[in-house]
Image 1 (cartoon, protein in one colour):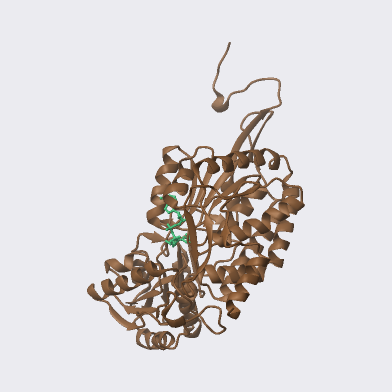
Image 2: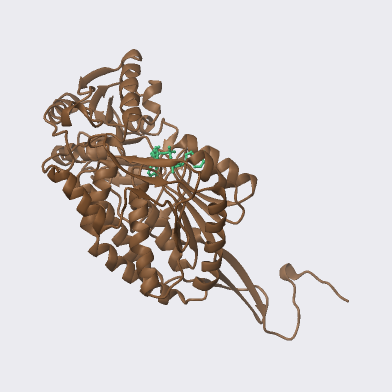
Length: 514
Ligand code: NAD
């Protein structure tokens, strides 16, 4: 047996993953009968990692019923006590960080450092939720009526649904699930069918902790295609909020289904993020920030830098340095040290990469570096050489998100022109400017500047911390999750008026004599 096979077997044994895993968890694991099998392949070499049974319609109903029942128990636990259970969950994730990180590497193709980073992000949000559990505050508002008090308070929602994308197979779920948990909600997770194993392994770790703590099983799991299970969730009135992370195309369908039932949703959709590099920038910081943004996770982040807008006074020198970075890039097996760019998720992602490059050339773009398949692991796996393309901002292809490492380069002269180019796409997730000029930076972060949900100065578009509210504008969907006051999305707001006087004065001085 090859040593990598043995490593994988040992990893799977430690994480209690089997060759065929049940893909439904509602307090117990169930292998739904007569449903299709979801096969999890490793993008590293195309090998089959394991299979997961998808959730049948009748098991789906059992999941919802159990989540509703767990909610009635969980909601009675005071928030700080919920927080103390989240503390245990954070500790369990710390203990399993190496193993879960390696699973993310195997299943999603992230480098070891990024795989572990994904689990660290879960730990960070678990820590955040512990503190939050003692800070779910409301508001007291001055009443216009004598002997009256007005307040606002936040009340839990009930079971919520989380539909997640392949590229953050665990952390994005936890941004929602952990915050929702301290708010008093239970959650039902539908992971991407490209990365179901990470979801199974994480649910196993967390369900054990909940059991040890004598807590209800608040984290349920369903698996299956977006069209079947995902849209069933979106249309299901029993699910009080749908938090959806994925492409603009899928998000629009989900949004329609949720709106039809006048439900709540958080939409975290695609980006088309740009960095502006000013002639006042620290060039080394700019190069590193743009390269990390464009190349990390092989360009498969919602926040990946897809466009760089460079001042014409430094354009030639900057592009020459970028070309060298692209020429020397260590692309390869993400388990190996020193590798910065691993594989794309599957063959269809490679085809989309190739066709976007052909299209860019047809529309007038010039390929400066990369742009071809890379033969790694004997031609198995889905590796490409990231592409650097000189382009014009009004090219149609530059306005779409190709979920692959393609960086379009544009030239600008004045800062208002850079901002116009920056804002000229339908998406509005993340943005950055590299400059040491205070006036330029202030311009960019003001209402005259970037139209995105995330705006960075002297750091790239990718790699957000959990402490801020995460999300974007325009086609990115307007959702916010993770830190700051995003917790309010997982609760319903009540405005309360109390009359503690002996009369009934009416608002606005209205008279009503009986
Ligand atoms: P995708 O849209 O193909 O799938 C995302 C999830 O939605 C999967 O679980 C899928 O099964 C489900 N789904 C698909 N169609 C559905 C439908 N009609 N109804 C219900 N569910 C459905 O996206 P992907 O390829 O997994 O992920 C990449 C995309 O996600 C990119 O566009 C990326 O920018 C975006 N993304 C956004 C964020 C963010 O926070 N804004 C974060 C990560 C990824």
